[in-house]
Structure formats: C-alpha cells, structure tokens
Image (cartoon, rainbow, N blue to C red):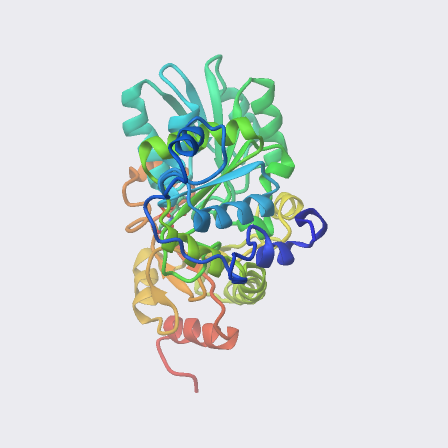
Length: 396
Ligand code: LCS
C-alpha cells in the first residue's frame, strides 16, 4: 500500500520501514560508522551523488533513514533530517537558513535555549533578531524588516501555551521572501501539521512526544521541498549533529504508538484541567482544551486536539507551587515532557531560568507557573495525586 492512501496511525506503524533481506518487519539497528563500497568507482559515484547508497553514518544510515522517512510522511514533507537533539535541529535550521546581515522574527516565549542561542551566539555571526508575542499577528507584521529572512515560531509555546496562527505566519513570511520555521514539539504531527498550513520547515525535539518514553534525546527537521531538505541536510552533516542509529531505532519504536499515547494523555489532561479549574486554591489554569484559554478556537482550528500539556498557578504563588511539586508521588518532579510518565516542573527556576525575569514575564511565564505534562497513567491516580499534594492529607 502507498503511504498516501493510508491513515495517520497506519503511517506511524509502517511508513519508512521495508523488510530487509531476512524479512525483518522492523528496520534493524545498523550499528556501523561506515559502509563498504563494491568498487572504487561506486565509492566515487556515491560521493559525487551519481549513485544511491550509504557512505558514512554522519551522512546517512538505514536505521536513521527509516525514522526520517516515517516522520516526513507523517508531516507531509519532502524529506526529514534527524539530529542528535532538538537543539541540534534548532542549530541546523538557524545555520542553514540564516547568514550575516539577516534578521529573524521569533516567538518571545520559545524554549529558552532556542532564544539564547540566537541572541547570544548567532548574533556574534551578524544575525539580528526580534522577539515578540507572535500570538498577535500585528506584532510580527510590525517587527518585519527588509532583511527579515525567517519567521521562527513555537506553537503551542513552552510552557505558556500561547498559540500562533500558522496560516497568517506563512502568508506574512512568503510576502516578505522569508521562510516560516515552526517548532511543533508541543503538538507532535498527530495534532498539528504545519506544512499543510504553509510552513516551510517543521522541527521537533523528538525527546518529547515523538519518542515518548523518556529514554532518548533527539531532534528532527522536516522540509516542505527537496531544495530546503538538501540545505538542511548539508548543514547537519557539516555541524556533525547527526542522530545515532541506536537512538533512531528507539525513537522509531516509540513513535509507533504516538496516536494511542496522545489520545490517552489528552483525555486525562482534559479531565485534570477541568478539575484544576474548579479548585479554589488554583489562581488560573491554561489548557488549550478549556474554553477559558484565550486562543481556544484558533488552537482547535489548526490542531486536531488540545494535547497533554497544562500549566497553572496556585493562589499561594511559587511557595505553594513548590509545596505541590515536593508532595506529588505519581508525577515525577522532572523537566522534559511528552512521555508516558506524568512530569511536573517549575519553568522560572528550571527550564527557563536562563531568561531574564522581565523577558520571562513578557513571555507569559510568571514566577509561580507550574508545568504539568500528563502521561498515560490511570487518570484517577493522577487526580488523587494532585489532590493529596494540594490538600496535604490522605483521602478520607
Ligand atoms: N523545542 C522545544 C519546544 C522544547 O521544549 C525543547 C526541549 C527543545 C526544542 C530542545 O530539545 P532537546 O535538545 O532538549 O531535545 N524542552 C525541554 C523542556 O521543556 N524541558 O527539558 C527540555
């Protein structure tokens, strides 16, 4: 069956894999650094791009390719490039598509290191940047300059759950001869496919929902067309931030259950968010699936579901949040997200502690904001865990 004819979950299971000579139904781990040529001519032709075939694992490897082909098919891209980490994907996108004198407009509340890399390091190579609240299209319009070459958005954003209108961003980018790059980590391809909405490049930290089992760090870029995919691959190969075959095998294995995992976690997240919203000791809850989310409608127009990420603040602010985080027993107090296990963390002192406080507040990350990544445990256990942590007493 052709990939195009199958549904999303069938693609998850089958796309990219083809039985090897032994008939193995999963792509084996080609744990090799290099591939022998049949002749000097064949080696030369592969280097010259005149013949297909593998050369060296930093350039390409069958286990890595199986994962790349699967994710590219899920996103509807022309090609995907797996990287050592999500930050490897961010670095590759910046370095491949920007140069000295270019300008980028980006989401103020992007994952902290994506912004730090741009403002503190790409700037040393002459790349200019403006960070705005991209959930308001007019802010982006105002920030665009003659030398703007990239609009880089993260939607939903980490951890503030701000939503950026991808169709509007694609239109703005293309009217200004810029590319639209979307960090879609929080949604995964199951809930959001930015290329279908006009984006040029999508990237993921596969550490999160795509792998889903908290045992691998990795990243991936997916390009709209082959020319872009080629530029991104060349940069990945030169910077050396390739994925490893064993890493690729684990990510591909985890990926196969993406839709099942998200469906389960999302159903629980919806219940937990509603439960939190009703409690008097919670100041506010932000979850895309709640009508109280300021961009509930836009989110559900460009995403097929609200996902598994919730953020909230307790009335007692950070102190109360710390008490909650120290008391949970089922949820783990840990950074990262998107895995089968529920995780809780405090962005202001953990994932986003590298951001100046003023920038953090502007990005919607208040001092007391707690981020909750819902896993696939029994929802009643998660609710009871939160209840005992908030009330500080066992159930009567
Ligand atoms: N993009 C987003 C939206 C992320 O959340 C992260 C990591 C990255 C890129 C970078 O990916 P990595 O290199 O870690 O694979 N976010 C993390 C977080 O929220 N907690 O720990 C890591």
